[in-house]
Image 1 (cartoon, helix red, strand yellow):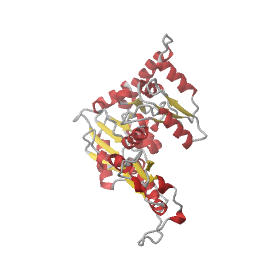
Image 2 (cartoon, one colour):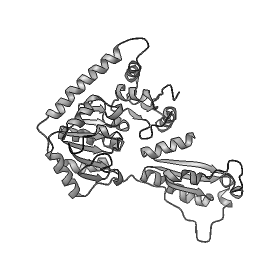
Image 3 (cartoon, helix red, strand yellow):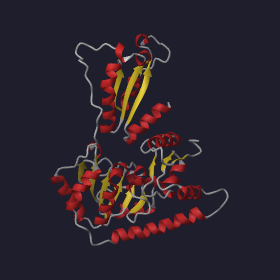
Image 4 (cartoon, helix red, strand yellow):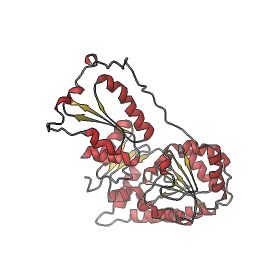
Amino acid sequence: IHLMNGLYDAAFDGAPVVALTGLTFHDLRGVRYQQSVDTVKLMEPFTVYNEEVTGPEHAILIANRACRAALGDRGVAHLAIGKDVQSIKLSADKRSMRNPGARSSSSWSPPLSAPPPDQLRTAAAILNAGSRVAVLAGQGALSAREEVTQLADLLGAPVAKALLGKPVLPDDSPFTTGGIGDLGTAPSSWAMQSCDTVLILGSTMPWEEYYPKPGQARGVQVDLKPDRLGLRYPVEIGLTGDVKATLQGLMPLLTRKSDRSFLQEAQRRMADWNQLLEKVESTARSPLRPQMVIRALSDLLPDDAVISLDCGANTHFAARCLRLKANQRLTGTGMLASMAPGLSYAIAAKLAYPDRASVAVVGDGGF
């Protein structure tokens, strides 16, 4: 159950994962043998690659394919291996007559695709025409932190951050209004309700009531996956491409906005919001305020900490009260809102970044 929950979590959030599962002995399938679950069929609905390994020679070919599929398609790849197949030595495996000893490549480079020039010009014309541009940044913009900062400065645009996009800008950046949606801030809601143009970068934040009202704002969206374009908001143009590469191609076509009043109003509202949070977080009472606990944790975290969020009320408090610094990273369950992933994510974070502090924020339900 935990495996399936975690893999569905990865599939919903576009996280590259390779899952290895077992099958019963190859000659005892279909006879109701113990633990005889067809994991290939089980995984079919949500995987980008899903195969049974028939032997060592086959494993050499398809393991690399599984890794490339997970990374390239940003999803779950699954390989199922029978108990007896797992113990076969490479020297004992016999290739088929059409396999001369084939090998697949173990190399992979992330695609840094950008839209064609005519689409970039169309998007730039929309953004240049707007007087109140707001940006929504998601996890697809994590590799474009510098570009998002430059863009916000160029357009005088406040940047609202989806939960998994919280590390795109540090929370002390003058360009961010913090989170958006049910975990968000009042200034982010104001920016979306007041803008005349919205630019969505690598996000399919699910709460549609927090986007501009249809017809209120012209829209531009950037996403690696074309089926995500226009999914939440009826944008005028959707740009299929990597956010970093797309912004690098787009920014030379943009005109710096001299009128900074929209950004300045967002900054004033953000100062008021932070003042309210400070008051809530510093007011002692019994029972203890969760906001005070999260703020104390935030102040104590090392500058390069990796934070993993559980799901529940603790997510709400952490999303608002953790003040992320430039080199800190944060993750959690996004689209699925899966229960109790915080500890698992924190273990994975420590494996990925052994020299950095790994912190899990876990609520009573997950605990």
